[in-house]
Image (cartoon, rainbow, N blue to C red; front, side):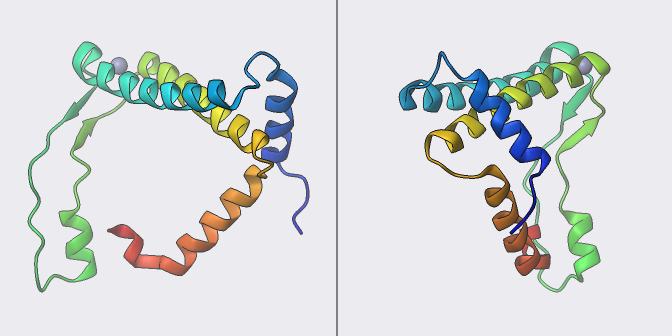
Length: 132
Ligand SMILES: [Zn+2]
């Protein structure tokens, strides 16, 4: 059993504030919308601000590469760095996205902390294969 975490506190805050959008349909569609807004904020950083750039092409998978060589090959396709404005916008949208994810947890009686712990355990087990 884990103690009360920041996630529990956040989950309680969401629960207290979520008076207007208590319907599962509202929460679920707001969650999806907030996800699109995170993506939109990223695209605007590229196309309107220009602080980050996308430079993408197919990446070849070397057959006999070492792990280090493989990591080197796995480019993010991103360059540049988010400016303060785009960072603020993106973080705000990510916050809303987390809000609605947490609201969904509340409606389904799922503890956010448990979701994170379960995923964390899975990541430890997967280890290096998670790079893929
Ligand atoms: Zn920017």
